[in-house]
Image (cartoon, rainbow, N blue to C red; front, side, top):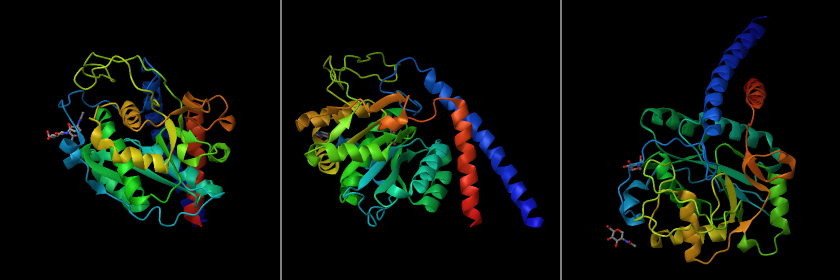
Length: 327
Ligand SMILES: *[C@@H]1O[C@H](CO)[C@@H](O)[C@H](O)[C@H]1NC(C)=O
Ligand SMILES: *[C@@H]1O[C@H](CO)[C@@H](O)[C@H](O)[C@H]1NC(C)=O
């Protein structure tokens, strides 16, 4: 009797949390939807559009040391079909629920449990740093840099991710680089890898071949100043969402960051670095930039297009986690 009452109590507590989280998610999801232009879209909030000009990696290096650095995550890697995949997730400090969801999916997806390693990339966030510390102590999967976590600091986050993988996960074969609200179909991804003859040439995503949208208005989310980027056309790049890159290419990119001045749009920045190496970016229609109609046929797309899905997902996850703590 007592234990079942306890279980019911716990369940109530959990469902209350579910509901609160859900409400927060709806707000977030809606704010994503009302953003006028689609690419490159991420879930990160803009905190400030003011940035010192003339940045390069030398000037920024003071902000790149890790505050949290789990170094042994890739030690226990095992291959699946000869393949080891590192997933780098650029996540916003406030998106605790999305990180929980990704961990839950990883835990459930036993098939790829040992061959896929997931790491979350975060910056500093003042009031949330205490929670991030706890989260990192529990899960050990957070890489945190000493820069302020802000939309226009995403390039620093990306650089940190590439450096981290070069230092601590060079034994991976491929890297998935994605936003925290994107999902990956690992089965389809591995099929794609297997179909590719030259493993080291893999650099695949939803490609923008000739980006012409350069925003010169300092108030715009994707503002690029003339000093930062004088040209009128962007290099080929993968806009926000998800792309995959072989670890060998990722390491080459990482070693070329020094040669390319940092601009505040991370997707374009990686495109610029790729240009210095004449690395080809390959388009695949299996990588979405938005919600997908049929996830089973895709490799990457956005999670949760409808609020109903969010609620269902949260119920399922809560029950799963509750069951797990019981055993
Ligand atoms: C980067 O900035 C530093 C400090 O301002 C400067 O000395 C260096 O020449 C710059 N490097 C490049 C590649 O622009
Ligand atoms: C980026 O991070 C640096 C270092 O923490 C900080 O000085 C700067 O204000 C941040 N940029 C934004 C747009 O918040």
